[in-house]
Each structure stands twice: as C-alpha cells, then as structure tokens.
Length: 111
Length: 114
Image 1 (tube, rainbow over the protein chains, first blue to last red):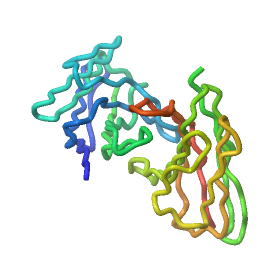
Image 2: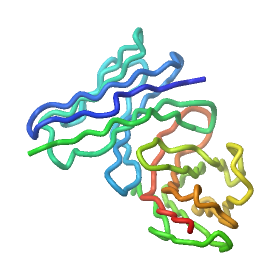
Image 3: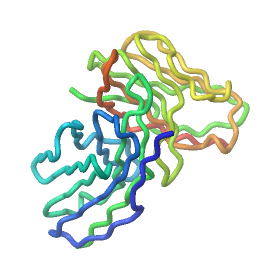
Image 4: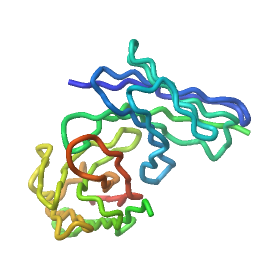
C-alpha cells in the first residue's frame, strides 16, 4: 500500500528558511497536499500541488515536486514563531478523496 | 467560508456513558469524514460519507456509530468506549464525486474516556 515518509523534527531560528521534506510512493497521485496542525487544533490546508507541476509558490510558501524521485518539499521563507507546528504531507489513497498522511514533521522556530 | 465546526471542544465520559460528537459545514460539500488522532500521530480515517451515504468504514468498532442526518451535518455517537479511545476526533469535508478534492478540517473534539 501507499506509504508517505517525513523527517520527524526540524528546528530553525526566526527569519531563516525552513524546508520540510516528504517522500511518497504512489506515482499516480494527482495531487499532493501540505497540512499544518498547531497544538490542540485541527488540520489547516496550507497548499497543494498538481502532479503536472514542478513548483508552486504562495506568498512565503514554495512547494517543489520531483516526480522522478517521488519527493515533495515545502519551503517556508522568513520563518516566524507562529509557524511552529506539525506539518503533514498527504497524498490521495483510494476513492472518495481519502488521504494517506505522512507521520508529520514538527517544526520548532526559536526567536 | 471554509469553516468546519465541531462540538463539543472537549468531552470527558465514563465507559458506560453515551455521548455524541457533532460536525457542521456550510460549504456545500457532499463528502464528510471522521478521523481519530492520537498524540504525535497522523489522523487515522474512521468513516467517509458521500452524498449522505456511508461509503467507507475502516473496520471501526461498533461502539462508534456515525450518522449523517443531512448534507451539512455529521454526528458520531459514542457508547461503551474504552480508555484507549481517548484521542482528538477530527471531522473534515470536501467536494464529492470523481477526482480528488481537498479536505477541510474542523478544530476537533478532545475526548477523554475515564
């Protein structure tokens, strides 16, 4: 079955760039998603990329997709303390828009 | 409006209690989902409703009983739960039909079973 891998932890200083990486296994995935979860909260859809794109930029967020290596990354420019959260990448799995989530990367931003 | 609301925010219940979790969305979505999330883990899919019909049940124990009374509402009825059922329960919604559509999540209900 599908398996989505992420590194578990990333620590950066405020103002630096953060790069969160994800590896997925289903090469037929049409969309790939990034969700953010702050402590005690639900998941917030941050951005997504269609599989025929290599890059998508949305303000401070840049998503890069390498289909050959099945590698997805999320770059956050000028990281702020409010960006501290767990970031999940997700790919479609089966029908009804169901998702397989990675284990999540905890981003800690220090002042 | 991309808001999914869930009530209550927190719930503490004993193993013999019956309670319900509620979820509501007004985005016109016709697919709704229940997830269970343990601490420091990704969400695990429990149920999917599409056009108010139960489409996926991920082998969830019968002490969890979902209900979709209309296209905007989703309930999860709880009965005779176990302490290991303590978790964050998340509701999500999306457009339905062929193809993949992004899911929008509610803030969750933090459930503690004593």
